[in-house]
Structure formats: C-alpha cells, structure tokens
Amino acid sequence: MDFSYKEVMSKVILTTNNAISYEVSEGESNKIIIELSSVRLPIKLSRPMDTSEFQSNITYIKPKRSGNNVILDISLKEEVPFNVVQDDNKLIIEVENPYDVVEKIREKVITKEVQAPDSELDEEVVQEESERAGFTVIEPSQLVARSINTENMTDDQALLLKEIEDAYKAMEEVAKPKVEKKVFVGAKMSLDFKDADIHNVLRLISEVSGLNVVTSDEVSGRVSVHLTEVPWDQALDVILNIKDLGMLKKDNIILVLPKAKIEAEEERRRANLKQVKQEKLEEIKAKRQELKDMEPLVLRLVPINYGDVADLQEQIKPFLSERGSVSVDERTNVLIIKDIQENVDEAANLLDRLDGVTQQVLIEARIV
Image (spheres, rainbow, N blue to C red):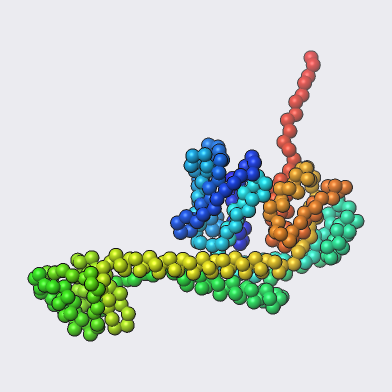
C-alpha cells in the first residue's frame, strides 16, 4: 500500500498478487469505504497510515480484516470527487485536493515543447518521434514555461475555470453548518405561575413579545414557573426546554412543536443539502475532466539505464490519461511518453525512482 500526493490530487495505490474484486461505498461524512473481496492482509500492512501532516485531502488510511475480506477506511478532510481505477493487480484511489485548487490550476506549468534530446540518445529517434507527434525539438535553454492564466487560456478554458470557481463557492455555501448562538434581547418580564396551562403561559409571552405564537396538537401539559425580570425570549426558551419542546421562527410567527419533529425536519434538510452538495461535486468533477481534456499533449523521451524497459512501461500506464500513451524504442532503450504535462511529469518522476541499480553482493574467495 503506497500513498502519494501532489498539488491537486492524492493517490492510494494498492498492489495485490492478482486482480481482485472490490466494492466502493461512501461511509459517514468525509469517508471512503472500499471492501476488497477474498483478500488476505499481511500483519505488517494492517497498521493505519496517518497522512494528516501532508498537504493532502486524505488524513487517515485504515485497513482492517472482515472475515475473508479487507475493508479500507479512508478519512478525508473534505468531501470531494474521487475515482477508483483498477489496472491488473493495482487498485488506484484518486482523491482530489480542494485547497486553492483553482489557483493551483492557474499556476500549473505547461509547455507545448518537447524535452530536448539527451546527449546519450539517438537524435534521429527523437526527431522522428517528435515530428510524428507534431512537436518541435529545441534546446533546454529555449524551453519557456508558461503559466495557465486568463491571458493565454482559450475562451473555453477560461469559461470552464470560472464555472469550477462558481461550483466550489456554491458547494462551500451549501456545506456551511447552521450554527445558532442563543442571545436573548427581548423585553424583560416576570412570570409567577403554579400548575398553569402551558397555552396560557405562551399566550402571555405572545402579548409581551408582540409576536404570534402557534402550537401543534402535541403541545400540552401544565407548568410552574417563577421568573423575575428576564427577557421574554429567555423565559420562552426555559419553558420549552422543560416540556421538551422546540420552536421555529419565521417573520413574526413562532411555531411551537415537539423537539422530535424539529429534529426530523432538520434531518430532512441535511439530506437535501447533502444531495445538493453531491450534485455540485459531480459537476466539479465533470468540468475538471473537461478542462483537463483541453490541455495540450506533450512528448517526453525517458532513457532507461538499469531496469527492464518493458516492465517499466507497464508500471507507468495507470498514471496516464485516456489520451496518453507510452511506447518503447528497443534500439535506444527509451520510453516515449505522450500525455498532458501533469501526467508526463508524474510518470517521469516514477521512472526516475524505479530505474535504479540493483544492489549486489561481491563474494571473494582466496586460496592459501
């Protein structure tokens, strides 16, 4: 199990002996639950992974056994779009990072030029592949990184970026918790009743407050109160709490009803907000994919010095988009990667880590 992150995406990569079946479900708020069927979890991998210190939306990864299955519990800082992709024996969970996402897209470095040939590479191969892809080979000193901003974006890209901004703002507005801080500012009044009908007490509070009080059929009973010089809204709050009642205020009307009914209504409201938020997340996901599809493709030639070029080709395929491709030039032992800049950089970094010298042991014998 590996974890990695970059500006706009965090990844959890699970490697198994064979391809497995899995089921994805969203648990409680800000959680992703993935159940892996018929999988054995080694003891050394059963420890949770705390990733909260990284600049990632993933804060905690907890694998646990469940019969013959393994459940992967991924905790998020914020609910965002995610993808689960299976490639042979690898299961890749991609989670978007929501922080300053639009600004980071704008700052992302993209260049349409191809990387200049390495002195050890065959320049004819470089030229041939570049011309086939429609790119021009230039020297490294000529490479000029350009930031994507509203000046050099196409109109379609700028419009999509604005739509993503608006979608994020709308989602944040929906996700804001409804917090009510009790501040009592009503006119002061005194109450002294023993075993009084609650409707009569509420009627008196209505007269003092100048508001209309409406009660549901479930509101009944008697109360005994002795309050001196307290705001009428505080007196109302105390009486409602005693009888396990609540209130909803709209304009100049106060509706009094049991707390259970208010909680049920609040639960319906939260469910509606969650649905709206999920729709916004799907909208953002679709628009970001559309924006990514507009990015130009770049070509990079990566020489392989130590590893098996065919094996490394398979290793980086999961990191490329549907528009991307990777091919092998066996004559020069070079991988030819074509994709958007972000994916090409990630694949090149991975190859740089994988293409290392295999450690060897020198055994000497001396005959005396």
